[in-house]
Image 1: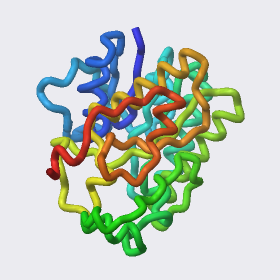
Image 2 (image 1 turned 30 degrees about the vertical axis):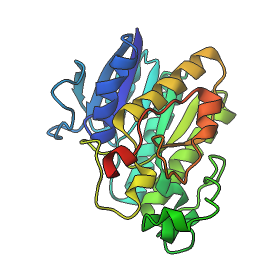
Image 3 (image 1 turned 45 degrees about the vertical axis):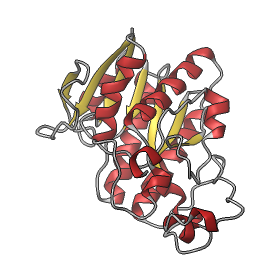
Length: 262
């Protein structure tokens, strides 16, 4: 069995992982840790999950207890205040390092960690792409590299850059961690009325494929620990580099935003 712990597993990303990870590999046994009373975003056909009510930002002893023996830890929880969020990140990564250093760790980053490279779609060619005037974009820009270092412009981006720094700290300590620069994931796996959402869209199944690929690469000893990868579906008009995770970990997204926008 693959003993996976999702910290913040009732949210949109966590519910997708709970739904699709066991479909990709029946060996996954998923436990979800979340705050008491949090709404579960998973559909009715989600795989059976053990739920534990726990505040990872405050209950250090409880957090360390649920980390015992885990093979995979996915850190999804967040708080709105930047200082409180970073303090929770410290608590979670330190606990994983102490309790289950053998585990593969995935920290939640976001495309917003690199906002300055493209946001808010006012510079060319991104403004034209955001308007979906694709025939006017020639040549198509090179994808934003997975090697691009964080360049956040908001507190949200800063908290994600902090998670990425912790993943690099794991690398330097000989542990396995990757930062997932999640794209636009939503519970309905459909489109949203946001500027250029089609470029960042990611189906929940593809997010699970990413996590599974990271874990399998870690188990095979081929994972580039400390990496940060964009987790985007195979969108026709993508501006993000998904070839690097495809090449390095075997990430194989199956969906395209144009099936929702076409």
